[in-house]
Image 1 (cartoon, rainbow, N blue to C red):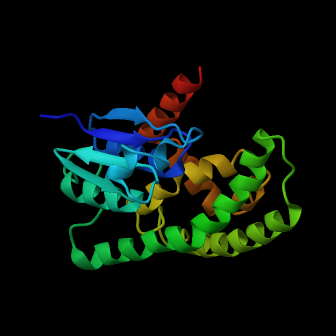
Image 2: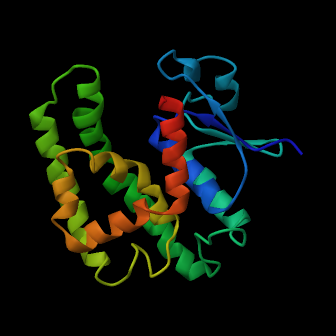
Length: 217
């Protein structure tokens, strides 16, 4: 059987999400580095796998998938009985999971990525953050985290008392934010802070971080 492959970058939050999901399900895979700086994702042969030129691409038994959330949803459904169960088999419960997947996608990630660009990526390139953009993104993320704080008063995790793909999807961006001034938005909310600390300590995520460190060594 051909090995599973993840084509992506260890600097790509979307790639890291997929890898965390595979580790949660105890799935072996080969990581194929795509050099984003060199623009490999915008050239062939990568474009033959994802015509939109974005990482990651996931290959499993002849099927190639792109779009990280789609990869994670399908993997969680197929391998939900192997390793950690990250979904619900009850359609009504899973509908709530699907709703909060969209919350992460449309509400949490946009301001988080703006902050990461301004506070992490720009300084690496020797550029100064745009304080106006930072303030606007912090204000948007502030409102989202207010909702999360209220939600976490009801459950241990965002959807229920079970860890699901909703929580997993937050991992890379939370990790980055906790290394910036924006961590104050998380630490000022006790329930969000506790949730963040717990999910960032999961063994599957630790494996992802170890892969990053090894690549940077």
